Length: 144
Image (cartoon, rainbow, N blue to C red; front, side, top):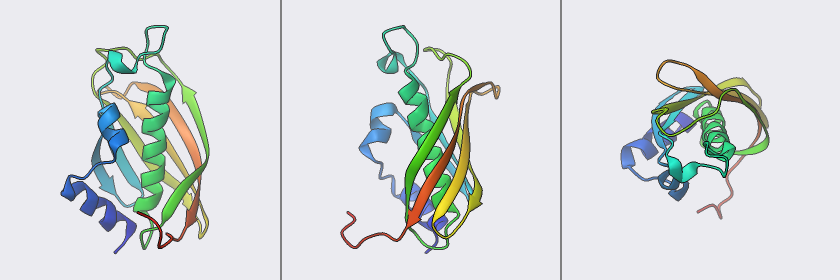
């Protein structure tokens, strides 16, 4: 099984990590080297200033970067974020509508992957972007 096949199997199963439920995220698409997560921010993810917390965007972007790397692997492996650099381009508020975090592989080596992602609305207006470095390693038998 490839990394992409594993991701598509997960999508078909309907199983979701609790974090995706917490933030209302969906894994909308997966191809080799590219994935798309969607979510619609609400007041539940506001910070004290009355805008969407940066952690919401960072979580979507980190998820897109990590799974983009996984989708390009010839076998399922762990892709652990070593570094995530997020740039915020515009504030988000309730009513912005559904956002897409589009993650793509920039380069993939035996041990390290470099990915990028952008968070956009339906009109492709960018709200945040990220670059990520990930450690690619075999899964341990203790993984649950």
